[in-house]
Image (tube, rainbow, N blue to C red; front, side, top):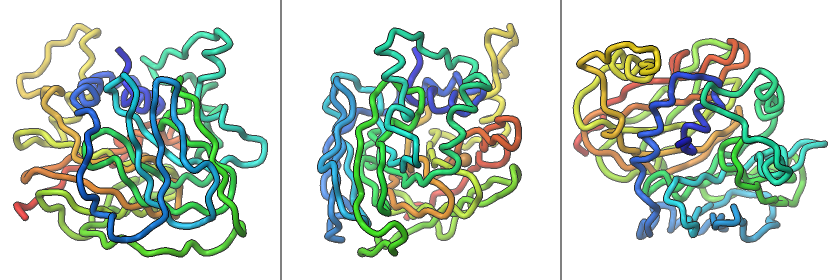
Length: 323
Ligand SMILES: [Cu+2]
């Protein structure tokens, strides 16, 4: 079964992460996360609710500014849901952010098992140019809130995947187009800076130190392509070679798995920051166990033939201290 995460990974134009299904299947359903680390900021709020009919946003018109966004999963599905805020440039509509209309018209669901076709990738290239603010997900209990900056414009709220069958609701953000975003700024324990440019060298730089327990993580995209942040943990010490060997393993090729391959069932999510465009900052909460965390982005690099950023360097292990 194709999961949301695989959809994202597959949007990343690669065949090698079908095994990531297990990652998403491991995700726990959303539950009330208790007092949010963002609660004291007094930021205006936006709530996105996932139901069996798709995503809804409340309110659907706001003034430009910094917002605390919460996602609630009221649908029957326990699959993780995402709420990424994508600005719609002239000529684009919310229909460009999902495959819902194609599904309604009876057109076949794109098969993402081998990644999108070059034509499908071409269709989503505008997403590399537009403003994307990031947003929360129900991938674990602490990722359901994010603080994002919303400059004026028309937005669609997507499920992190232009080929998702969930329709994207619309949000109007009023105000001066180029006005500075004002509002209290969350105090982050750690900053993840996304670097790299020109189709090479994409990496995460971590300023500060990941500590055990829930903490605010600031994510700054200082590169020239959009990125998301997927933070996961494995119960024992691993190496990047092991992670790569596991991702790259293709059972259909008839190869014998190596004994030190990892068991994807054992990965858990520590955090998530939805895709965000160049120059943007968002704040999320991540919750780590002591040990290591794997940080990855699987968005395809159109300047490198669709190679996912993870294989260009955005697949890194960082230490998590006891706190
Ligand atoms: Cu990336």
